[in-house]
Length: 211
Ligand code: ADP
Ligand code: TYD
Image 1 (cartoon, protein in one colour):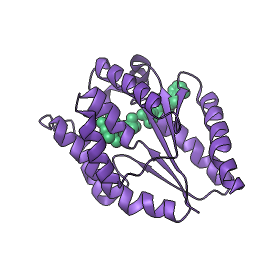
Image 2 (spheres, protein in one colour):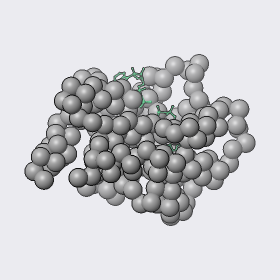
Image 3 (cartoon, helix red, strand yellow):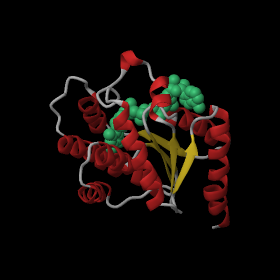
């Protein structure tokens, strides 16, 4: 049986990495075999691309180049790691996937969504997550959680950029109600995780047990 693909989305500082760490511990407690990746990254090549994308000195990077570099990193990660793990029947957790490009490069930078969908379906061989948690938090609160002195090339953008991205995630949510779940991220880490755990048990673990 194929494994399940779980992604986490949301603006920078919304708490994705924190929830992923809690989910990893939960899977380990229950003996569930999983792989966990962050985007961009997860393969040697994708980590190299990550450095280019997050380097604050690369101010000349155009939005189309940015989008293609994210897609290249994603293509490599999908082929080398995500697909093989799913085919082995493992759970895959990913900190960001195609929805990030739609939200950031589409709604944030204003690139044409039609191209972004095509490029990314080519890059991933049309792989879609089984479930996507969208952690929803306003940009000021999210920025307040990040330390100002270590902001990367994306994070130095103003709050209006992140407001557009948050709006983009709302649209992604509306378009994909079968796999997307919006989570109010303006709560304690524990309360947020309680919801995530409940949904995974209901939507994924039960489904596997029934098959
Ligand atoms: P992301 O991966 O979405 O950028 P992180 O999980 O790294 O976000 O969280 C960003 C910062 O906010 C970290 O310092 C983390 O400890 C803190 N944080 C995460 N979740 C919460 C929460 N629910 N309430 C308050 N602070 C949080
Ligand atoms: P990262 O430090 O991993 O941020 P976070 O912990 O919030 O996920 O940096 C990744 C940055 O790249 C983040 O600002 C979101 C951005 N990004 C895009 O703009 N498009 C994409 O397709 C992806 C995967 C990330």
